[in-house]
Each structure stands twice: as structure tokens, then as C-alpha cells.
Amino acid sequence: MSVNPLDVILIGAGQAGLASAYYLRRAGIDFVMLDAEESSGGAWRHGWNSLRLFSPASFSSLPGWLMPARSATSYPGRNEVIDYLSRYEARYGFRIERPVVVTSVRQIDGCLEVVTDKARWHARAVLSTTGTWRKPFIPDYPGASEFKGRQLHSADYVSEQPFVGQRVAIVGGGNSGAQILAEISKVAETVWVTPQVPVFLPDDVDGHVLFERATARVLGKKDGSEPGGLGDIVMVPSVREARERGALGSVRPFTHFDVNGVVWRDGTRTDLDAVIWCTGFRSALDHLRDLDVVTEDGKVEVNGGQSIKQPRLWLAGYGNWTGAASATLLGAGRAARDMIPRLVASVRRG
Ligand code: FAD
Image (tube, rainbow, N blue to C red):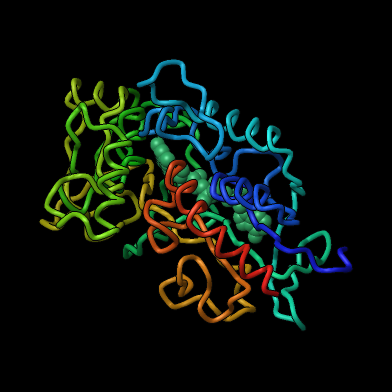
């Protein structure tokens, strides 16, 4: 347990935490990182085996040290990202306590108290970078609890192996849905359920272009008419290969489940063995509930990453509300570069 408050406690040592730590260390700030994982890599540790970045290595780096690339245009796999993050934290010698789960953050006299499953810590400021992986989102569909097939979220998907020979619905029209569909459609009968026709980017548009367009849009420099939101589908090799096989057809959502499958709008039905929800995530903010800062839409009101209601609390990496494209490797670094000088100044003011 710490007796004197630290300057900063950083909750989470995924990419957003590490990018922030880089700038905190450079400013000479006294901080510790508390991370719930057994080892390095944040959410990437839980990605499926074949997961590939949709941004090339050259545009997926954290501040200070480029991600090594097999080629300038290759899309790194999940293990390469974990290896990079692991070497990144070792390179800068960050103090990271693992596995430590933060259960609550409370205001006490002149500082914040961070309660964990191991000990209590105190700090002048807390920076929360807990990401979204621990908060998978599944939309409500009538009858879902009666369906006797298997349901899992992309957060828990590992490989196509358990689905060989089965009838599988993949729900969700983003990059996760497209990549998982591409893999499973090789071994199973699939139906891809998306709210609208998915937006496929041209083959020569990679995640870097996507990132720049999304950032420009958030910063108000684009009118939104150009394709390329962060949810649009990048044609990584596996998705292109699925297109060549004619496996990327999609249908609009069913109305409800029954015991054996789903019922479509026209009343017809399809038997299914499994449904994979590729329907996104929400910010993992349960540990902040005692500060009473989390709004109904599951965010915290911030100004440049600083909580408006609790100025000792800062947040990074959750998405556009904590900085343009801040939930990407490149964006995490840019958001940290903009935010950390203000956090440092506020800690030094007391
Ligand atoms: P995380 O990586 O989730 O790190 C948060 C850390 O906080 C974790 O270690 C977690 O254990 C810890 N934590 C959480 N709660 C607590 C707690 N209460 N106490 C202590 N520790 C806690 N981005 C790109 O730039 N390029 C891509 O190509 C790309 N592809 C993607 C593909 C998919 C399928 C997905 C899902 C995402 C992709 N992303 C990509 C997005 C993004 O890079 C990741 O979502 C990223 O892991 C988010 O990083 P983070 O540091 O914010 O959160």
C-alpha cells in the first residue's frame, strides 16, 4: 500500500496506457501502472488466432519506437502486436503491477484512492485506460434466451475449428464480422447479418487511410461524404479471398429467435447451430462508478480527456470521445501527446 500519494496512477497497460506512460515518463512524473492482465498486450491477448491489424505496421506504432514490420505494407498479426507491446514496455522500463484489478476509485482528502483486489493506492491524478474488451455489447433480440444453439461474442472467438460443418450466423458488419466470416465460411454454412449493406473499402485503401479520414471527420475537416469510417471494412487478404469465393453476401437482420434458429422479416426461418455477435464493445468503466461520473450512455464527460465533474480523473483510448481515433495504435499516441502535458501541469499545480 502506498503511504504518500503518487503523482499519477495509470489504470490499464494496453496500448493507450503505454502511449500515455511514454509521455509521463518523459515529463519525469512519478507513476505506477495497474493492469488486470497476466502479461503484456492488453486486449490483443484476447483476439482470435488469425486476427490481423487493418493498419500496416508502419502506421500502427506507439510514440518513440516504430513497430517492426516484415514489410512496409504488411498487416501485422495479433502475436506481432503483443510482442511489440511487450518489448515497448520493457524498453521504457515502466513500473507495471500485474495482475491487479482495480475495483473502485474514490475521492478522499486531496487525492484519489484506487482500490484493487490486492491493495489500496493513492494518487493526485488517476488516468483510466481500461479499453473496451471487457465490455462486449450484444443487442437485444426477442427470444435470444430460448435459442438452444451456441451464442458467443467476437471477444470470445478463438478460431473456426469448433464450427466445422455447422450452420452459423455472423451478426455485425464491421471489420470483426468480415474477418470472422471470411474464416468460418471456409468450414461452415454461414449467413452474414448486417443492419445495412456493409461498406467495403477499395483494395488499395488500408487502415492508415481510414484512420486519417476518421480523424479529419472528427476534427471537422471533412463533410462525411467520403467513404471511410473506422467501421468500414478494410480488404485484408483473408477478406479479399472470401470475396473471390463469393462468401461476402449479407442479409438484413432477423426479427427474433426461436428455439432452433432465427425468423426473418418475411416470416421465413433458418435453423442455426451458432450465432457469433460481432456487434462491438462499450467502454469498460465499472471501476469508476463510486465517482459518479459515468453518464447514461456509458461515457464520462471530458474536456481534452479530463473529467469535468472530477478534475483529478483523466481518460484515454476509449474512442473519439477521448481523442480522435484514440482507440487505434496510432491514435492512442497522438491523443496522449496532446493530453499528457495538461495532466502533468495539473498534477504540478497540486
Ligand atoms: P486494451 O487493450 O483493452 O487495454 C486496457 C487494459 O486495461 C487491459 O490490459 C485490461 O486488462 C486493463 N484493465 C481493464 N479494466 C481494468 C481494471 N478494472 N483494473 C485494472 N486493469 C484493467 N487498432 C489499430 O490501430 N489498428 C488495427 O488494425 C486494429 N484492428 C482491430 C481489430 C479488431 C477486431 C479490434 C476489436 C480492434 C482493433 N483495433 C485496431 C482497435 C484497438 O487497437 C484495440 O481495441 C486496442 O486494444 C484498445 O487499446 P486500449 O489500450 O484502449 O485497451
